[in-house]
Length: 158
Length: 460
Image (tube, rainbow over all chains, first blue to last red):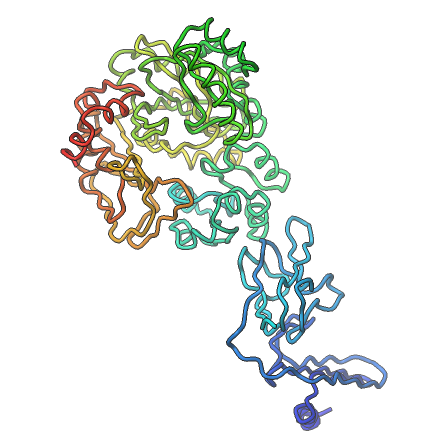
């Protein structure tokens, strides 16, 4: 796949409001995800980076998948709250290294939704959102330390 | 060698510990409550971790959060300062089990001196006289009356789990004894979670004289002389000095006798790191054991000035496993040092606490003047913690010179618009009896009881 084809896919994604696109070919795999407001995704992905695309060369059968979801309307900067850390420890986005993140940017959460784990003294504490809303930003990288009161996510309350 | 130390405290002592670490090239981690975000110790440390909301019970006393902070910053040791968790054997245990060195006495020593009753027992076994009193907790009113009859009035009812001068009540006869016994138990339960009280002979016009001790992990123990802390208001120390004018003036041989007694108690408790053995001394030169403070104390600087020993540095070295390099015979006591505690309280309004913003802060300087404070211009004193905002220490070749410098330094010290105890301490320093070195623990009450308003405002 060359750059022109990738650009074409990106245009198609924008035009058709496709949020996520993944393609696996013989020796090539590409996954692309758009940020909520059309910009690069600010959320974290498993590779530990922030921005897309994540391109890996792998032997794999032809498969293509696209996550077609209606992207949320552009979220305003005002009216945002923060989910703050209630404790001191190490912040994890997912229940285990092999699992998917509990939540991604754009996810709608309820007060009981688990948003992350904070590990302290070898105990994994599941942290709940405590509010209802839509996650607009993840502020802490995976496996980084957090202190009491430190903002972890930005959320637009509903 | 420690690479990094977490300071589990706040205010002036946290600053003191951070300075000692910096001088040893040890990196520092400060912990702070949301109310202390602008505090000096947070600015000074290499790293800082917020550990909770304002109240100490939600921050500085939270063992889990302190340990978490220690783990994410990967420290080698924790210095607990004084107060808070400094004498909490459970905290010391948790640190050690998490592979974090606790800079203080071993939990074994802490348990041997767990409360006043166990400490009294230990002192008796070490052949150190204790104030005549009950043998441990007084369980019933009948026991209280019998004890008072045996030792003779006046007596003092004390909480065994008390400390910092709290949980004490005097009684001069059976009626006040019974009343005091009941109320003391209720108060003790509320304040310390332990209703146990014991009864001691109330010694009239005593001096409160304490001995600084240091012990390493190999069993070497030394004492670094005494501090006279008789100038107290409601059992809270205000002015401390070394040497004690009582010992220097009238009972010079007491230093050796009491020093040895302090060491016997420390040995019996297998004491390590820094500690203070407190005694009460009557006007005849009889001394009685009170308790052991198993931590570095507020007034440690006066000992440092007169001995040249950096006590906080020694604490860190001992915790690192270093043997004590100072022997008892090495120690030389030179000169005289006095400390005044600067509290944000209004001495003209019954010492009402005065939190708030310091708009103008200027600390005295010059030869022989030492300031231990976390205050600065623009600092907002939070109401949630104790009112002490600093300590002023002066050192002179003799008591007269130390007093002259203290007078001079107190008058230079500018802290506005916050009210402080400085005018009161000026009155103390200029009092003729204090100048002669003739005072007891009743001094402050006597000073306040007399023509109070005149006296203080005259000298302010």
